[in-house]
Length: 76
Image (cartoon, rainbow, N blue to C red; front, top):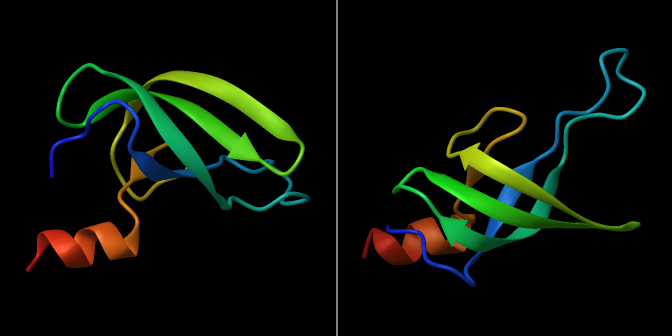
């Protein structure tokens, strides 16, 4: 899939080093596309939102990825 501005994806938060707050997935809106795997995001969480630039695609904390439904649709 090719990312485009306005698409909603998952962003995996870093969490805290001591584990007080675990790494969790948040909804995020793509605000700018740099490459097929690097985008800028507006991340939405329960207490507000923040903007994150040059986020790489992947499964690790601090990265974004497609939602399972999007992956399923793309595989059809």
